[in-house]
Image 1 (cartoon, rainbow, N blue to C red):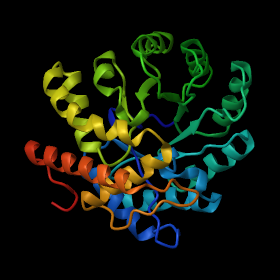
Image 2 (image 1 turned 45 degrees about the horizontal axis):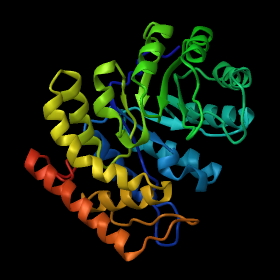
Image 3 (image 1 turned 180 degrees about the horizontal axis):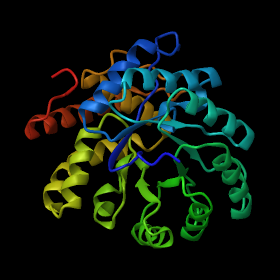
Image 4 (image 1 turned 90 degrees about the vertical axis):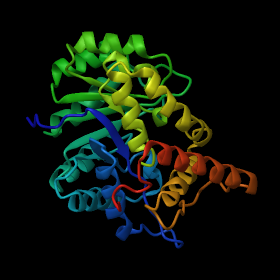
Length: 312
């Protein structure tokens, strides 16, 4: 079983770049991966919710993973996201991603309809029995319960290569402690939701965060400062990025616009197209995004960080 994959910091979710005709802009993938490497990400993940995976064909999803692996050239691990309500399709996609060189597999808990934990155990058992790579499970369930620490512990005992769980919920410090205890630290916890809860969780023993790509370097600094007891310094940076996170996460389609807009402001993307169906921003929203982007650029300048460290 592979044992070299380790998350310790920021796993950057890479957006899918599109042309004005809504085709995937394959030539832009390299710049996004270069940016993640230069910003200190410990891994990248795609195609996830933040990659508009739900608008991509199966062929596009697999090619995104393959292209990312190729341009990464071993510099950074590529986590392949395979979200499918069907276990059969998840297995097929995961095996294909293994074949093209992914370092780990990530999958979201299938919540199209309510399922009990016995049903979820069967689903994940089927996937874990079919793959050799480490598995990261994402549970995003707004307004409802996520998997319990006991479930995480039992799944890890059955399948030790279930290694990470990503949770998107508030007030989860106690749950982090329970998961660490249930798994004897065999399953690392990642906080999602754009990194909104990173500052409060950094000292709890989380493995890191899984936000969008555009704030990777800033959130990595927040995580490392807070984890080493320099929380006041971390908070000064975090206070600068939080308005961007809060505004963008009002709506997932708004998030795509915000993420790509900031990446363009940082000199990483040229085009910022979001594939239909998409949210159309009004002039006030676009103006506010530009204002927020300017605040991020000013923060980078104050910290002595380049806009695009891959080009520096």
